[in-house]
Image (cartoon, rainbow, N blue to C red; front, top):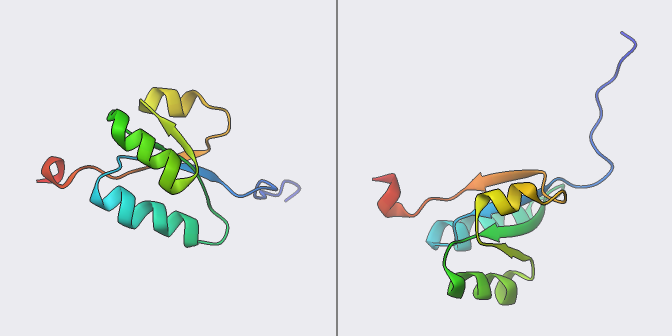
Length: 87
């Protein structure tokens, strides 16, 4: 029909919002192991967790969702709430 939708020439760069058990052991690992996705960073309000993110994940650590979404290198977010929040 004349116009064709295509993917960007680079992998989508995602941030994980939350670095509790699910964020750390599940979402970060799944993003890293999925071809075509890239882990750009993790959002956590906890300074110690942000330090762990930088050391363990070798990616950016953001102190707020707003900071992550303001980063032009971020294409999307995966929310990984603490289990206490899900209940």
